[in-house]
Length: 125
Image (cartoon, rainbow, N blue to C red; front, side, top):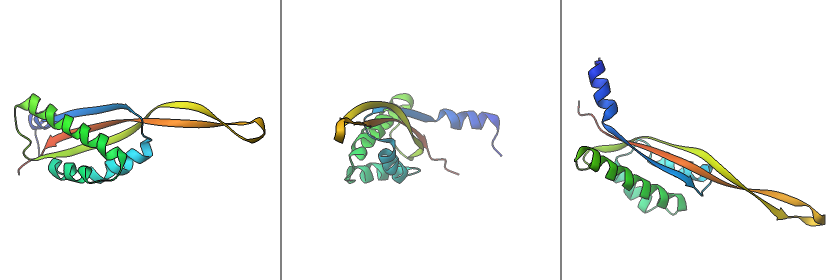
């Protein structure tokens, strides 16, 4: 059973990186985010590098930012790092009109999202 001191230590041994107002629909971003959830950082980078989806480029950049945050905060290399949490929330929506037949108009909703990634170090038990 972990004591409260250990729990605080584990909670502080993680870094956060955020991507705000990304102009990709949340549904498309979640497809890529689900592939790298709970993966080792190096495996996730390789997977994102070789993925054909546009969202993978943005997530790769965000993951590199998270690794950089880890190195700046703890002065430690990226040994035994993994993606503890990653979630995608919807953000603002641009509403546009598209002409339709007989003088009507259809609403186009251009969606965007926020991505939050939490990187932590694996525990060696």
